[in-house]
Image (tube, rainbow, N blue to C red; front, side, top):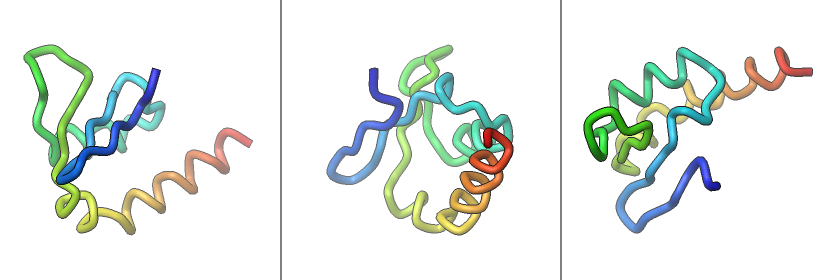
Length: 67
């Protein structure tokens, strides 16, 4: 199953598939839940672009921790 689904104006992300707790918290803060209790959040692509440097940093830290 996909963790990220790219839409025209936004993306859908399955938070349950994201192992980094800080990244999940960020996604919860900037995203909008699709349904109450659902792990899926919808995020506008412009909102993601604002947080891109932070997301890249978190991704690198997770990759180094997994290695």
